[in-house]
Length: 364
Ligand SMILES: NC(=O)c1ccc[n+]([C@@H]2O[C@H](COP(=O)([O-])OP(=O)(O)OC[C@H]3O[C@@H](n4cnc5c(N)ncnc54)[C@H](O)[C@@H]3O)[C@@H](O)[C@H]2O)c1
Image (cartoon, rainbow, N blue to C red):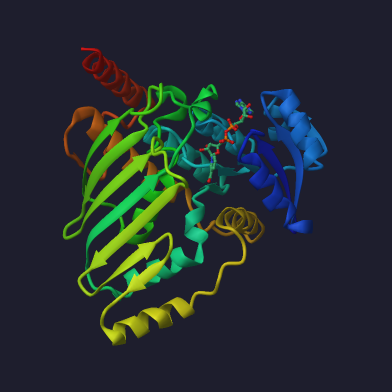
């Protein structure tokens, strides 16, 4: 295959980034169709990006033989069912984050991709940033010694209007709030740089919005010798969104956003600088770079740089955070298929009970 035909399903906020990224690939990718349940939105999107076909039916994209790749830019609860339909129709699927709203759904998607022998990936674009690559290399080479403490924060502000969109703010459709939606990126960064923690303890709250899901979370993540504090918020009225990642090691430290690796020892400092120089500056924004990698993974018949398993791992940590917040107990990782939040139904039932109890406490 020398070029791919692309379909975009969901023509809301993030879809534009997908259309533009595909169009930058010139002859390698042609966006052939777009579907949105809101036909007028699909039509306007098609006109804006010069896309020949638009429809209010996803099936009109999935049934086409000239489309091999689909981007799913949809509400979270639709990621799994529409990815399953797309894989069954023989498409390679790039789904926006999070992979799904439960591990049960994620596992069904991964199985379907294996069965169909198609690529399945999830957008986790921070991995494509040069500084993230540099941070990973520094940690892999042990250049700041053994990490013993980390701080990870996603302190973002989302206006009440943001939650007026029908699917956001609800457990059944968004699958959670600040943690699964905004901080998924930060959680993935933790996993990419530090690996999966062994235990987690978390609290969630809803502070500034009239929504079911959390707009605040504070968690502690535990490895063997490393502990991290994690905070996710969409209730933080800051002048600009703040993302933080700080890792303290026995021989130095590493900060992201902006990237500042440091060691007091001159030799190590030089080694860090040398390691950083081996990673070239990424020319494209992470989101675009990931979409391009996905297209080339299909053309070159290889795995994409971000696998569905990477998305599953991020979702596993997200799920453990929610389970801990619902039960007010420490949760051990990995989560088994018997974990109460593994299934969508189990997670939603726990969320329902938690929200009702929380509401009752607030009203008393
Ligand atoms: N990677 C990132 O940095 C990033 C940034 C923003 C959003 N996102 C993700 O992108 C996804 C979409 O978010 P958004 O902000 O664009 O949401 P949005 O609400 O703006 O867009 C979703 C679109 O899906 C459409 N839709 C709903 N049901 C449909 C169906 N059955 N078939 C076809 N279309 C349907 C809606 O009409 C809407 O146009 C989410 O997963 C979100 O988390 C990722």
